[in-house]
Image (cartoon, rainbow, N blue to C red; front, side, top):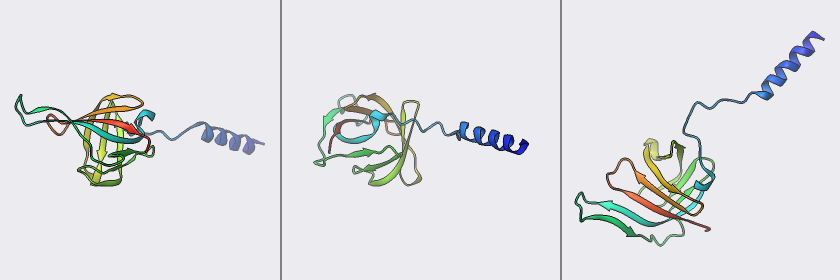
Length: 132
C-alpha cells in the first residue's frame, strides 16, 4: 500500500510539472506567423537627403515565411530555408548559419509588420501578410 501511494504521488507530480524553459527568446506572437511580402524598405546613406521609405516589390509571392516552429524561409538578401528565429522583448532574432541578426518589431498587426534592423544604421522593412 505504501509503495502504491509513493508511485501515485510520483505520477501526479510528474504530470503536474512541466519542463521549464530557461530561454527567454521563445515567445512567438501568433500574428507574426505566416508569409510576408516586403512593401517598403527604409535606407539611409548617412545624409539627410539620401534616406526614406521606398516602395519595394520583389516579384515573389512572399519574401519571408515565419513558421510556428521557430524556423523561417527568407528569399531576400540572406538566402535561408528553415533557418531559425526567436522572439523576445519586442525583438526578433534571425539566426542564419549560426549568426544572430536582431531586429526590433516596431509595428505588428494581423496584416502588417514593420521591423528595424539593429545591426544596420537606418535600415527598416515594412511587410504585408500574404495568403499565398
